[in-house]
Image 1: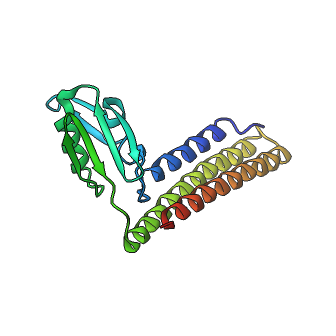
Image 2: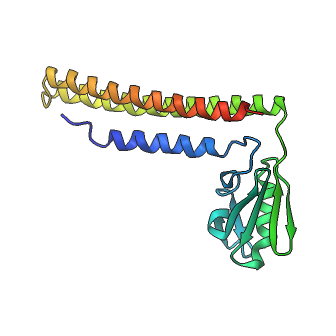
Length: 184
């Protein structure tokens, strides 16, 4: 009995968690802070991520430089980054957007750590749900005599091992991000 698509589903959940927490500010400028913000470009007729509309660089640890591929969208990009409410103030400067990333206060760091823990818990819950669905599938197959008890228990043990591995991975991602957040 194989686990089917569960390893891929759990891996996608893990990647989602990793991408989700990458957007949490650490006091240092990284493209991940703004790259996934949706921009309503060309009068609202097109929606694209900043990453798709501009080059994002970090000239120094405290600033971002966004260079739109189409200079006509510079105002829209600035407007929607500001509207995203992520605590950054974009400024247009000669056709590019400059963003100074302020240092985080202790209180703000603690807020971000709380946010991090919530995002990590959401990821854990999703992985547990995926495990629960597969366990129920194994149970139904055993009841329908499509899977004998030994194979069922072997498959369940394999699934639990995979789940534990994913939980450890989420824990490590969280620990690294928390250390990064609390570093002054």
